[in-house]
Amino acid sequence: MAKSRFQLVGSLLRPADLREYKIAIEHRDDIKYPFYDAFEGYKETETADIRKVIAEEKTAGIDVLTDGEYSKSMWHLDFVWGLKGIERYIADHGYTFQDHDGGHFETRKDIGIRITEPLSGKNHHFLDIYKLLKEEAGETDTKLTIWGPAHAYTEFTVFNQLVGEDQVYKTKEELKAGLTNAYKEFLKEYKEAGGEIIQFDDCLWELFDETNPTGFFAQGNSALANLADEFIAVNNDVADYGHELGLQVWTHNCRGNYESRSAAGGTYEAIATKFLKDQHYDRFFLEWDSEVAGDLKALESLKDSDAEVVLGLLSSKTTDLDDEERALKMLEEASQIIPKDRLFLSHQCGFASCDSGNELAIPQQWAKIKQGQDIAAKFWS
Image 1: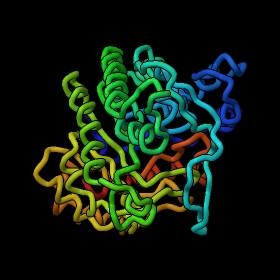
Image 2: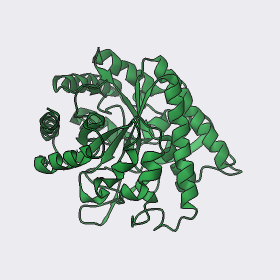
Image 3: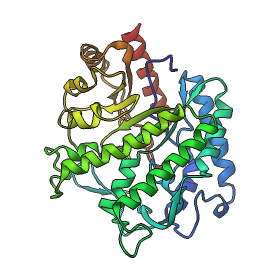
Image 4: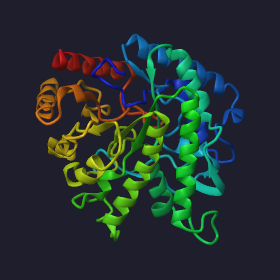
């Protein structure tokens, strides 16, 4: 598998020509995913930019390649847009994030989802993108990043309430079954297309931390233990199926990342038993670039497992290089809990979870990646 101890979470800053199309998409809900037919030159531009960024990753020595997530407008919704039975629309409001001054910040608004017929993950557009990635990667390892199934299920049922007598799925159990089946259909075809690594991205775990002021507790949600268990069961159902297919199943967790802003707080320690120990992943990408996530004690939950841990000690949100001494110190602390040969280093999240990207320039992005590689080489030398 990977030779380098530095890993990319997935997304990279998009060039200006591609961003123009993504911005145009944002303001249209009369068009159908993947939107190529609606914009002349879009597909050609996206394909050319994906080829270029893959070549740049290879030149930079990245050994688990992605398409830079250039094919996406948002880190999560593009996957469900590609499922049969999903209709997107422009909602009244975007997602709520915390602005730099602590105030209210709103994301793009084309986040509305309707279910119009039973869901299916067959013949997904992501397979076309993956085949392009695989072709360009040659012998280098590749991974595909998609929305974690439990996060999608929670958004559909808790936040959007896409169940009821007037809906395609009458109960949560019916929706859960339909959604997980769609994920499994997709994974089967992904494996058939040559896929070896699937990464489920997820940023809801910390909402189950009762100390989180923006979590489910603060919102007055009841029966949280049951909701957490249901959440984990959904993820494990799909992860276990991925393992049956022979896939490596990874996950990435953060607290939101939109134009260098976060959506939530919460520590890993408060949720470690359920969301680390009890989830069936081969590799965890975790966020520890600031004190918000708490200390590294949460790693104790993975001490006796075989899971690998990618420590997101570096920040993809800032223009400056990271504190090397802090990263090396925390790597050493982590290695006292998890053996060094099961640890990796990364930024806390991708550089462009959504099309607009974080508030830094492309040369700064690559400088930060180079620093991460250098720190990893120093620690594991």
